[in-house]
Structure formats: structure tokens, C-alpha cells
Image (cartoon, rainbow, N blue to C red; front, side, top):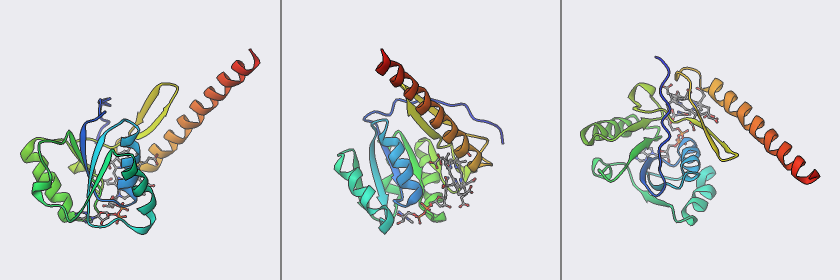
Length: 167
Ligand SMILES: C[C@@]1(CC(=O)O)C2=NC(=C\c3[nH]c(c(CCC(=O)O)c3CC(=O)O)Cc3[nH]c(c(CC(=O)O)c3CCC(=O)O)/C=C3\N/C(=C\2)[C@@H](CCC(=O)O)[C@]3(C)CC(=O)O)/[C@H]1CCC(=O)O
Ligand SMILES: NC(=O)c1ccc[n+]([C@@H]2O[C@H](COP(=O)([O-])OP(=O)(O)OC[C@H]3O[C@@H](n4cnc5c(N)ncnc54)[C@H](O)[C@@H]3O)[C@@H](O)[C@H]2O)c1
């Protein structure tokens, strides 16, 4: 599988559906919120470890939680795209099929072949958004590249601040 073309979408105030409220879903909601999306979360449960962060998400007013098992009818034309991180092959299959029917791009966290788009590692800073994705085979490599870029941007911001302080 080859590399994919990075698209920088305007998702501010756009409706996005996230299925699941576990570790992966919450990490992705955190990223989507950086860009001002309106997020609906459909999840059977919110696990103990994710509960506090989910509460914080809800307080932003940009996230709505619907506690239920995913049903076909939950996925409507209203959504710009769908991210499914449910750890349930049945939910994955349902999300994928419904998105095909409606022609909505879908990302399935458990299966890159079912993903119309990859969810990138994202680094922000200095009025930049950097999105990183590999060919989908080495997620650790992508995470390490993101960490490296994060450090570079932080260093460059520190240098700027030092110069500003001295001026
Ligand atoms: C970038 C990042 C963004 C994010 O997730 O936010 C991301 N994966 C991250 C981490 C990570 N992923 C996995 C682990 C567990 C350990 C391991 O296996 O390494 C960890 C580590 C962790 O979770 O800490 C397992 C895994 N990942 C995928 C599959 C299914 C498959 O390969 O088919 C499986 C097996 C699941 C299973 O076995 O059930 C698929 C995808 N993961 C992608 C993105 C997309 C391509 C991007 C790319 O590869 O460049 C792609 C193709 C599709 C998609 O999901 O969009 C984030 C790092 C960012 C950061 O840390 O900053
Ligand atoms: N792409 C990646 O970066 C990556 C990394 C690690 C794991 N994964 C994969 O991502 C998926 C999620 O992993 P996790 O560790 O966050 O799992 P998790 O078990 O912590 O969370 C799953 C969430 O989905 C909800 N859920 C389960 N079935 C549902 C259904 N039918 N309808 C609605 N909600 C449902 C659960 O209640 C829970 O909130 C798994 O398939 C895992 O293999 C992907």
C-alpha cells in the first residue's frame, strides 16, 4: 500500500461522528477539537480511564455523547466524515457499509483497508498544522516522526521567545 495525499480540511463547526469512547476514540476527539469540529460520539460505554477527559470534552459544548450501540440510522448525511474506533467488528462493518451507502468518507481504526482516509498524527504550533501519516504499516514510526517535529517546533518557539526577551 502506498502513501496517501494529505488534505487539510476546514472542519470548524462541521459535524463529525466518532463511534466509541475508548482510548483511541478519545485521542482522536482531542485532535478534532483542536480544529473546532462539532463532534457527536456514539458509544456503548465510556471507560473509567476516559471518563474525566470525556467530561471535559462535554463541557466545551462542542461534543455530544449518545450512549448506545451504533445503529445504521445514527449515521446520516449530516456528517462530513465518520471515525469508528469501537473495537467491535460489527460496528466497523456497519459504519463502513452505511458510509458507502451515503458516500461519506469513513475511517476505521482497526482496519486500514476499510479506511477512506487515515487519521494522521497531528502537530500544531507557530500557526502551522502538520499532519503525518505513513503507508499504514508502521504506526510507531509515524508517532516517532510526530514527536520529533513536536520537539523542533517547541525549540523554534523557545528560540523566538529568547530573542524577544533579549530585544
Ligand atoms: C498516527 C496515529 C493517529 C491516531 O491514532 O491518533 C495512527 N495510529 C497511531 C497509533 C497506534 N496505532 C496502533 C497502535 C497499537 C500498537 C501498534 O500496532 O503499533 C498505536 C499506538 C498507540 O495507540 O499508542 C495500531 C493500529 N493502527 C492501525 C491499525 C489497523 C491497521 O493497520 O490496519 C492498528 C492495529 C489495530 C489492531 O491490531 O486491532 C491503523 C492506522 N493507524 C493510523 C494512525 C492510520 C495510519 C497512520 C500511519 O500509520 O502512518 C491507520 C492506518 C488508519 C487509521 O486508524 O486512521 C497514531 C500515532 C500518533 C501519535 O502517537 O502521535
Ligand atoms: N488506529 C489506531 O491508532 C489504533 C491504535 C490502537 C488500537 N486500535 C484499534 O482501535 C479500536 C479501538 O481501540 P480502543 O483501545 O480505543 O478500544 P476500547 O475498548 O478502549 O474502546 C472501545 C469503545 O467503543 C465502544 N463500543 C464498542 N462496541 C460498540 C458499538 N457496537 N457501538 C457503539 N460503541 C461501541 C465501547 O463502549 C468503548 O467506548 C480497536 O479496534 C483497536 O484494535 C487502533
